[in-house]
Length: 68
Image (cartoon, rainbow, N blue to C red; front, side):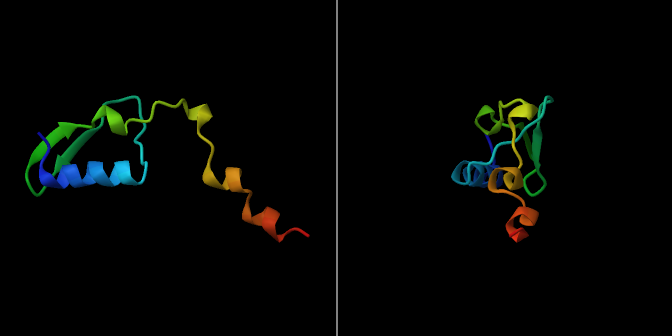
């Protein structure tokens, strides 16, 4: 079971829709409690890297905004 600190991290990720990506297991370690666990699947991003579009590309770049 996750310590209170890791649980707060999970809650923050859910609240802000933050996902973690990578092909390897992600191990989370709380230095305060000495607890360690594998990242829960609800926080894993299952998109392929080609599916991910940087925020500036979606909204247009700052250079585009400066053009007349």
